[in-house]
Image 1 (cartoon, rainbow, N blue to C red):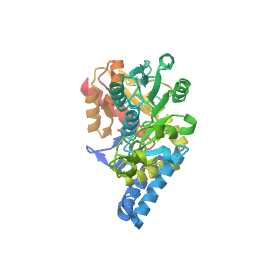
Image 2: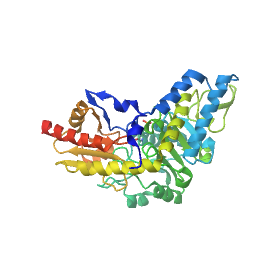
Image 3: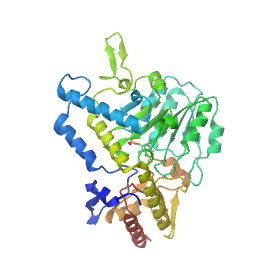
Image 4: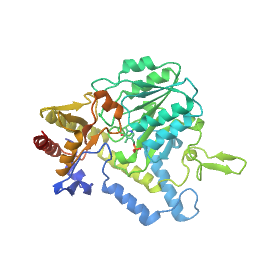
Length: 405
Ligand SMILES: *Cc1c(COP(=O)(O)O)cnc(C)c1O
């Protein structure tokens, strides 16, 4: 292992707290990751030293906050290898990024146009498109999934046609951990002139994404899943597409000239950034990206692959345990059930032992319907987790099984 995990864990004070009298084992990283001191310090520093509104003040503090916020945008641009700074739109997270794009397409989609979603999506990458289809009478088509929890790429090819306008797929499934073949999805969609939105909420935390190479038309990210604060994220969009979309919200910051007869909008990225943004959040997000790059995405991937292999092997020794999502391209996440035990009951007992897992449908009900289950127990790992913690989870499950069966 190339990571000094014990040293890294010192950056996350929360990891040494106790829950229910037991050391916390935090395995809910796919819902939100923990925040290192370096990011918390940046938040404190902002409010201690230079909290001010941006882009309008002539005074020193406002200039300092504006500079830091725009520097943060630049850090994010570089990290994702985005061509232009104007293509980085600050949002409140993945959900708002997706809604911004879905809202924008309402004025250009026509009745009978087709849009394609996948069966592996989070609700936030389903519902906004359903709302869009209701408004425009466009038709929503679904790429089916296989028993292994992968997308049926043959079926995808069949769904594409000249009627296809948009395709939206997550890079990594939050419920199963499957890494979808987004490169191929994008390339095929482009052959039909369709645009592709990739929901990157689960990928940006584990994989270094090069957006020029990937060639996605839109990509959305939430900071809180990659060591940043909640309530901030980015939407990447190709410049010419963002220019053609109408603004999502009206207000301050997004205008050029306002009269009661006519308002003209500001250029990118401000056209999509109405109102006072989460200034501190944007700055802290960039700090989180610096932090992750300092550890190194290659190191993170290597270590997480080991954790995943270890957890999978150990879990499968437990009788009656079934893992959902068996792709050989996965991030470090296991979704499972034990025969005869409701996921909620298992999760509750694990919590008593200080182990935080998620139970339920993980905002992906169609996946649960596919497997005909009410939900799963999901343990999602990050680079600060350890094999010892996985051992403790296994012990916990065995104990819980004895209590429940
Ligand atoms: C978490 C998540 C979202 C929603 O992100 P928010 O930060 O809640 O907006 C969307 N898609 C996937 C795949 C997710 O994991």
